[in-house]
Image (cartoon, rainbow, N blue to C red):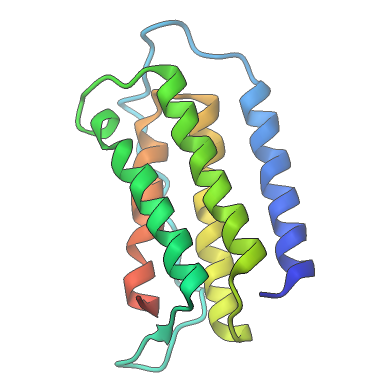
Length: 156
């Protein structure tokens, strides 16, 4: 992957996440069930030629499996279950770790790299919001939305 571009993106998104995480936590029991999900705008993302998908290398498959596992673990929150704040924040940290793994290990051609870059930016932004508001259902929905684009872009 283009290390300079990804390092800059990672630093920017993680700094924004740290700022959000430093914000005051909502009162106990306060959840933003009413907040609409921010739709991921994938219209500007690079796309593979019609009817095809880009190949995923082994690190991409591994990193995406990690992301899906963490988002799946958050499903209890999205379906009205209660996950503890520590558990939600641990899954958000695991999401960030999976993205860092992808930045460090995934090697793609420029066009699929750019598409992945956009997808991961959306994942990091939602993860930062989840850390700031562990009851935020919109962030979980945005994680799912971002990851839903992956199988349309890459053959895994």
